[in-house]
Amino acid sequence: MKLNTPRWWYVRDSNHARMTRTVLKPLGWIWAGATARRIARTAPVDPGCAVISVGNLTVGGSGKTPVTREVLRLLRTAGVEAQGLSRGYGGRLEGPVRVDPQTHAAEDVGDEPLMLAQGAPAWIARDRVAGARAAASQGAQVLVLDDGHQNPALQKTISLIVVDGETRGDEWPFGDGSVFPSGPMREPLKAGLARADAVVVMLPTDVATADPELLALFSGLPVFIARLTPEGPPPSGAQVGFAGIAKPWKVERSLKAAGCDLVDFVPFPDHAAYSARDMGFLRDRAAVYQAGLVTTEKDWVRLTPEQRADVAAWPVVARFEDQPGFAAFLTDRIQSAR
Image (cartoon, rainbow, N blue to C red; front, side):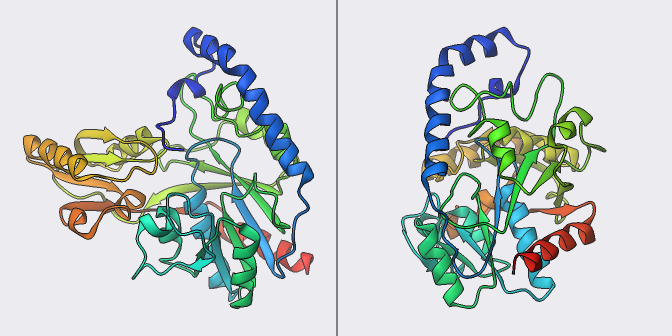
C-alpha cells in the first residue's frame, strides 16, 4: 500500500480527526473482522525450525525492519544460523528465492529484503510456508519474519510487537484505537497483544524515556526499549533530504536532531519507485540551495546505480538499551520451545 501515513490518524483530540474517523469506522469494522476470521481459520504450519515474528499493530512504519536486522545480528553473533524471511513487498519475484544483493534489485525482491540480506541470509516468498521450508532445507535453525504478526501461516516460537514510542503533544502511537482506514490499527489493540510474547518500544535517540501511559498498555508482557541509532553522522554541508517511507516526517526530524544542515525535505509515498522525473526534481531542488541529496538506506536501495551517484545514504540501526537481556530472552525462548 503506497501512501504517506495520515497525521490525523495519530491525533486523539482534533475535531477533524474525530469526524473523519466516524465516517470511516464501518470500513474499519469490516477490516478488523476479516483479519480476525483469517487468523482464527488458519492452522499454523511447523516449518521444522524456530520462527520469530517481528510485526506491529499499525499500518505504516514502526521500525520492524531495523528490529528484524538486529534480531538476526544478535542470533548470528551467538552462533545461531538465523535467516530472514519476508513477503517481498514491492518486488516482482514470488519466490521462494534467496536474496542476493549483488544480483537482485528492489524491483525484484523489495527494498526491505535487500536490507536484511546485507547482514544475513534472507529469503522472499509470497507463500510464507514455502519460503520457510526452503530456508529450513538450506540450514536455517531460526527464521525471523519481517512483518509477520497478522500472517498466521507459520507456527511462531516468539511473536514480537514493535511500537513507535515517539509521542508528542496530542499524537499517540495507536490514535484512538481505530482500525484502518479510520485509524492506524491493523487490528484492535487487545487482539494483537493477546498473540504477542514481548513488546519492543522504539524511541528516537533524543527522547529519554517512554511514555508511562503507553507502557501501562503492555502490562503482563516483557517490554524492551530500542532506539534507531545512526551508523554515522549525516553528510556535511547543506542537504536536501527525501524519503519514501510510511512516516517521512520522522526522517526529517531525525536528520535535524543529528545536526544535519537540512535546507529542504521532500516526502514521497511509502516504497516509492523513484522515476527520472522525481530525481530531476530533487536535483533541481538541491541546485537551488547548492546542497547535496540525502535519504534513508531503505530509499537508497530502491535507486538505480546511476541515481545513487549523487545521493548519500544515511543508515540507522536498532540498538536495545538492554542488549544482553533482549538476547537472553530470545535464546531462552528458543531453547525452551525445543
